[in-house]
Every structure is written in structure tokens, then in C-alpha cells.
Length: 239
Image (cartoon, rainbow, N blue to C red; front, side, top):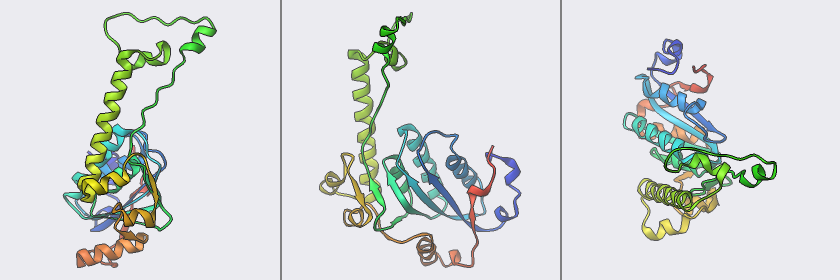
């Protein structure tokens, strides 16, 4: 189902068009506007292409995974061009590379191919103010870490989760950008690059903006020329 059925009959969505979706700010959850816009696009048979505009420092790995997977499903149906307006780092970069080409500015910030897991720990604070935390049952979960501190189990869990996520992220970048092991080694580890550096390293395909993306689409398929309307999905109210 569309995120909001009230939008499906909007006149701009009832004709063939190029969709425009913006991912701006932190990648926090599947209730984010950009994710709902991508869902709307996926179910709209009149959308012929996507221009994905990204200005994001990244966010949650699980949300990036969901966004990347949805973008790959969209890409099976239509060409996708990503425009990095300011930054595509970490989770933002992962989603940027799901389509055909990545365009950025020479001064855009690109990369941060790494995974950082953070959990606040309040154990000492609670002890100082005389609050004791107890749990019952068998086993351990990460939910108790802020109150009881890290244990051998939770440390190992975090290490394995981080390593697994990082390995997956690296494999996605290697596959999507068609990098050799030697090329991949130069860009991983959380490094960030300006656009001109990212281009030399194979992380992006060229420089430009939305108009550049439209020119690429027209060259890819002459039915996607400048006369085809572009619809910004961000203008729709999403439930």
C-alpha cells in the first residue's frame, strides 16, 4: 500500500514523470520522510526514473540496510541517478551507490565507510545517587548495558555486530563501485574525501547537480528528456 492513499490520485502522479527524493540529515528510522517517499515511488507505475538527492552524514546501520534494499528494488524498475548535494557519508553513502551513477560537487564530502556502535552507560551515575537496577530471568541483552555496564558477553556481542556490519558495508561498496581489493583498501576505515578525491578513488562517477542528472537520464533513454516532468515527492503529506 502507498504510505498515504490520498496522494495516489494527485495529477502529477498520474502521468509519466521523473521522481525526485531527498535524503537530508541523519538516517534515523523507517518513519523518516525519505523512506516513505521511496515507498510511494516504488508503488507508482507512472514513475520512469529517480533522481535521488542526498545530504546526509549517515545514521543507523539497520535503517541504511532497509533503505538500500528498497532502492535496489526501485532500481530494478527504473534508472536511478544520485546527486550528492553536500554530504553522503556512512549510511548516506551506502544508499547513494544503489543506483546507476553518483554525481557530486568537487567539494562534497563523500565516504566514511565504517561502522560505529554507541551505547550510553549510566551505571556509575546510578550508583552515585543510590539507585540499584535489577533484572530477572536468564541471559543477557544490550538493553541492560546502560544500567549494569558492559560484560564479557555484551562486549563480544558488540564486537561481532560491528565486525559483521562493517564487512557487509565493505562488500556493498566493493560490488556497487566495482572496486578491486586494493582500491577498496584505500577508501574504507571511516575515511572521508572531498568530491574530487572521491572521483579519483572511484567512489563517484562525475560532478554536477540535478540538471546534470537529467542530462544523464536523457542520454540513457531519450524518453527521459527534459520535456518529461520531474515530481518532488517531498511535497506530499505522508501518513
